[in-house]
Image (cartoon, rainbow, N blue to C red):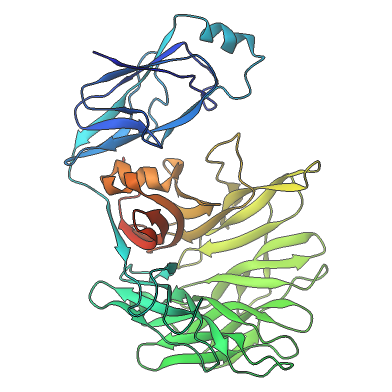
Length: 471
């Protein structure tokens, strides 16, 4: 017998509604809404009667030995051919006579998942905190080969004290220490190949206008421990390393000058130096990513036009990457492939004057095609700051965050919710979790790290998957 619920299903992506929707689930998994209050199991047909206001999204959860491939195309099917979650909504269509006529009709639409027999393609696990402190951990990034995860973990020196850590499967979570200062508070943001060099920032005892504890960029190495990198002269002592080259020789990030924040480069042979700023506008720049050999960095700089994504070639003038059409002139480059051929970031595409709210879109940049927008997870609910975090070596896979909603973009499938993809590929334990961020991706696009909320609170996680499935 078919299960029945009396709900109104809202369909913003397909722009229609029906008086009844049938969820028909074959062998191999189930279909449920995000909260799990509606669930349709293997072999069941579940009917959803429309009678009122509702806004929902459905995911397909495979059983062990299966993966979810796509929503099945058929006559009057919903989300046909898509491998992402299926949004169902009629929000905003109260005055639409076509929608209202469909709601009053006897029409039936179908939501049918397709499962295939295959061992799980995805795995999911959590990273343990440092011993002796609290359980709170914060993800910072991952090494290009995926073997080392970095971040910070609550430690037992005092309330709110965190220590940078490095995690590997063989050694577990190991603290990296801190720079000399009154407190222990260090954070890690970038790792070299295999994680043998790490950068971030920590407390420092450098005396600046009476301050006894300030932030300073560091480079930690397996052989030499933590080394302070310095800061610009004239400003409050506050620098931070945000990325490190795969060979560990170059760190980029942001420092403080008397005029404002400025992007820096630190190299083993030459030390701490400023990166160029665009002419005009305010004085502000930040470098977020660096190439494998340390020769190229990306970030943003201010100019007479506004805020602009830039690329620094260390033997050439600063390079403007442009902006997406619409909105004010504001773009930021936040991630880059190891060879620097593909850059990702966000650009403003609209500005709502009534609420003074910017609307941004994630982009990918190449020399051949310039800036190209990646679209939106939900066109009717555009987040103000979708931010790419990492780009695979071939440029075909990008991960990022829209607020607390991590996403995956592939050249073949476009934008999808990252958690949905992991569940579809067999990481079904995630149905009891909420992934709140992705912080790094290996260069092959197969290993990820970030933060999430689960049965035991907030944790740093590590996951493996196949970003190109289904092919």
